[in-house]
Length: 241
Image (cartoon, rainbow, N blue to C red; front, side, top):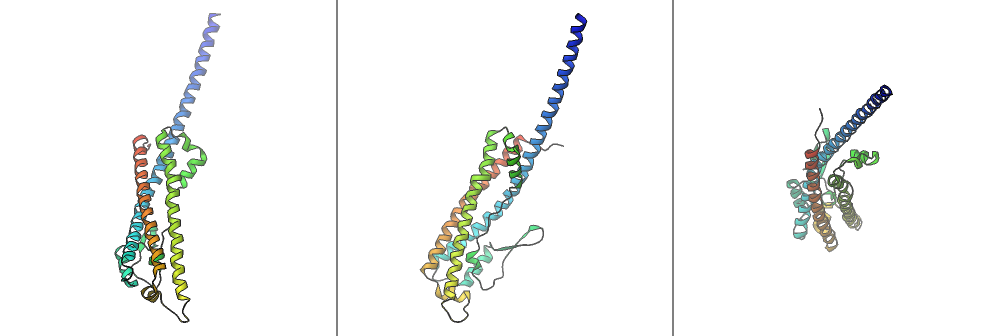
């Protein structure tokens, strides 16, 4: 009987040890997976930090130009605005390797007033973590809430303000079209701004200035939140060899 009991204990211990080792292995693998996922998300957020810094600079320049134009509305001509943009650019083209090339040569158009700069941060990996459930596996509640806030509330607010910029830009474009249609001959954009500018145009440019000021503040808050999250991630998660 004692022999049978001893053999039973040995078998039980072996099975229990086997389950324990397997559970430990699975737990370690899960921890490695979530660790790698958070590290990758941190890389995406770091990329958004650089994108946001450049976007914030563009919005600051747009705000500056709009402010100066409104303050000197009666005295400025379109060439003066072009020169200001050359010193504080925000109109750009995307060239090789995603690099930006800012415009320093100008055609006769109103883009210097109507350029609104769409808001397009990366969020592919966040969406992957969200729908796979990996986001919920982040044990640090503060970090998880910060990440969720960045990719939802804060990005939605910044994007909402950029869409208001787009709407205002459309109103500015409509002003130039309406003024052009008053003539039975070809009239340049420069001529319209230099000679036909009125209170209606000044009002919409003042709205543009106010909107851009709000965008600037939201982007500054968003950038700070991104930097805080990257610091939290680097403190708790390390790249595995």
